[in-house]
Length: 66
Image (cartoon, rainbow, N blue to C red; front, side):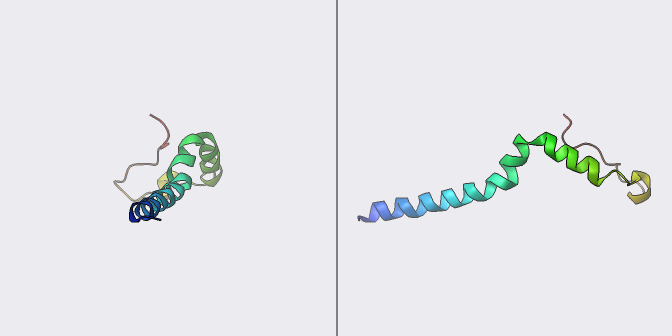
């Protein structure tokens, strides 16, 4: 195998590894917004926002709203 092929395989493997790492972190949540909204509704259901927020800090808002 020539030196160019080895270099291409090394960089291609690195790019593939980075893409595989970004899929569950970035792409999956973007394509499944409704699932994440439901999870947050469940997680935040018993919390009174005013009791847990420090003074002067903005109250939680839906990060998925535009």
